[in-house]
Length: 85
Image: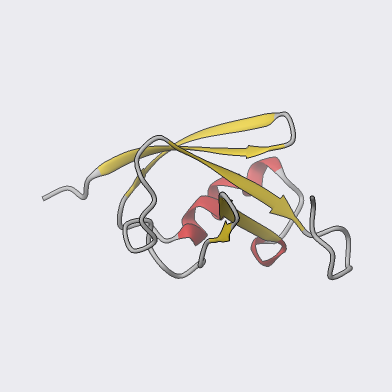
């Protein structure tokens, strides 16, 4: 049986990315899909649903991410410990 597909939007500043994914995909997969668009490493990306930071290793279903959600991407600022606003 094929895992249930879902559609997500990931937003950063004025850019919005649309992805098809599986409920069983970990958040890290979303970050890998974003690599061609940003010159950042996976550990320098954070994905949020509202104010909640998503766990890279947990899948979308376990984190209760509904279909057609809009998630927020934040990137580390250079080599510092600071992140985008």
